[in-house]
Length: 269
Image 1 (cartoon, rainbow, N blue to C red):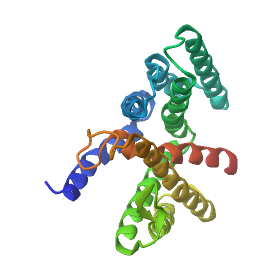
Image 2 (tube, one colour):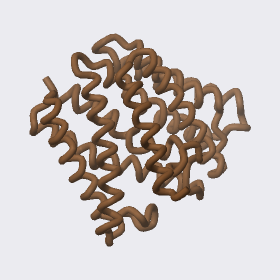
Image 3 (tube, rainbow, N blue to C red):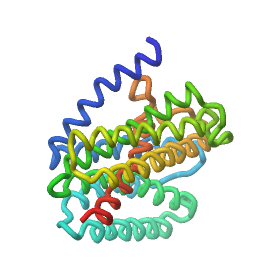
């Protein structure tokens, strides 16, 4: 089957599933986030292994449980206190492993594990925090997901049609400045349409959020590209036909979620 149609079919199956869990929220969303975190952690571990980094499995995979659970049970107004506890707890665990697993695990191994745990599970847990926002948690989370998708679609199609100047030629030759601009433009247009259908923000704020998400989403994509480049692989996995691995699909969302959450908490009354 053609790669394009594989992408379309996977999207037609995957998007309704994602929207369903976002709509349900609560425990179903928590379990969904934990499953995604485990898949991403597994794929990231494979990449790190190719870079000759040995990550300890207990804290690395344990973080896929730790941060989503902390986000889920955090009382209103104390979300970052709970997540900060997780960050410190995970740091102490890694320092203990440096002692008790000496010399099998080196500083570089533990640093990669600690950074990878935050990259996957800490960032991903912000979608639980967004969904728990009252009274528009559902709408906010849908907005973030839709804007991220719009940015990816805009960057892909505009880049293919008009792209000529490479954005990061050594890292990802296929990404262009034209595609980057197209992603942001698609994001802004989608935000304006969303505002008409579901006016939860002022037009100025939703446009500002769209510009920020359009920029940050592409940073997230480039971060994963750098990891795959170091691991000398094309995709993080092959579980999603036409798309690669779970991490390949969540690379942008990992960054847009936390940024959108902070935007909502700081800039909205």
